[in-house]
Image (cartoon, rainbow, N blue to C red):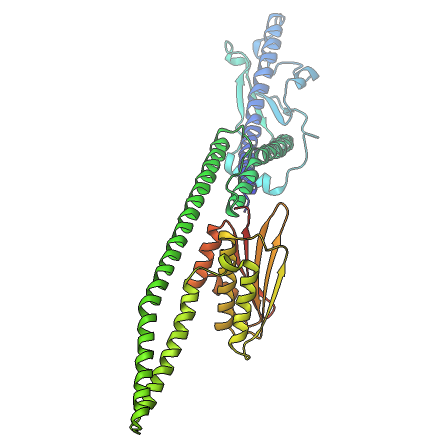
Length: 456
């Protein structure tokens, strides 16, 4: 999952948790606001009745104090304005048939759902009535009792929650959108870093990254640049080491060729001479004891060993490109394979471009790649047709493409992962030359392609 989506998902989860917390807080606050409204209504009505009580007491003339109760004319619109919606107030001691004075409870809000009306009182408890004396200095003046309406309290709480949730949802949506855009903008440079790493994986180690404003991303970009430089340096060192190893291997091959020629060649020549002498002497004596036949068999075996030795020496000595040039050496290579046996598969040679001025390590590498690929195709597959294509791509690319295809089957992935000496050797040669090697499935078989830059 992409990092931006992960961060946005976590942000949305945090917003949802905050929204749930805000809903719970709004529910508690709205429900308890009814208690505060009840206490405030009781206090206001008590103060208003206290003023009426003392005014009537001063103007009562000859009336007894108990005749002032209940306070006259307290059921008025002025008193009604002092009572909060959903709260009922009564005066005690109440007169006969006197009803509580209640605030407006209709139209307080939408009717809450049943689950809300059942859950809220269960968890937050019920509302208590509030009692306030009319006059703290005159206990006989009576008291004011304010009682909240439970249904009105639930409606008020539900309406308050709806108003708060609307605002909270808008804020949550705005925060989520703006934060998501900020996260996407902050992580946008990561795409450039990933692209640079992908180019480095393809061998383009010298990759410049833009300057990032974020300190962390700037540190990552700097580390990627340093890594590219070190990889480029390590690749150059490895290529130089591989070239040196190839030179040492070539020197050893030439030294081995000299040893084989000087030691084995002379000894085989001596054996052949002794066999011929024995055969001649036996023939002159005219003895039919089989010595002449044995001497001829020794001569034939010696000739076979000398032919094998010459073939080995030809492979161990310097390749033909240094003597004949790349084009002529490739033609000679294909002709030599064709001449071995008529039952061999058909080998098609396709040369494209100007190959006359290609020499040195590039020509040697191209010849070795073609030689090894043809050898593998002829020895390790049942191919009926093999195609060798060598193309020079001029222009800015200026590279040599060698492609060998066969129809002998084979698993390209298994061959590519093979640790055989032949493939390992040509892979090392191509890498040392700064090129690339690929092994892919072809129509009915395998395709081995090598690209060798001529400017390297």
